[in-house]
Image (cartoon, rainbow, N blue to C red; front, side, top):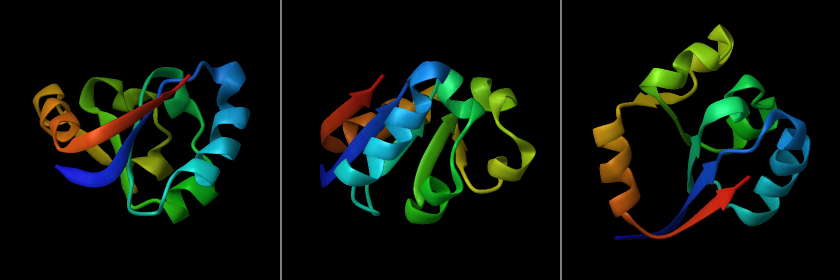
Length: 94
């Protein structure tokens, strides 16, 4: 298991500014972030530049802007399950 943290970002669109402002205060650059649902509609440049392990579920990738897709890892549900099992702790941001 990894000592890093897995962040699950599932915030509704109305809460995204708050979540994206709080995330860099909590997360380390080597932490992993899975962005889900409406949170995929807007991912700020500073988040993409700071964090190198950002994931999106394959069935939700249609919510991403094309310019963002190349900067994220698109994963299947089975890969998501494997990813979750690698971490001792996870934090859900809603």
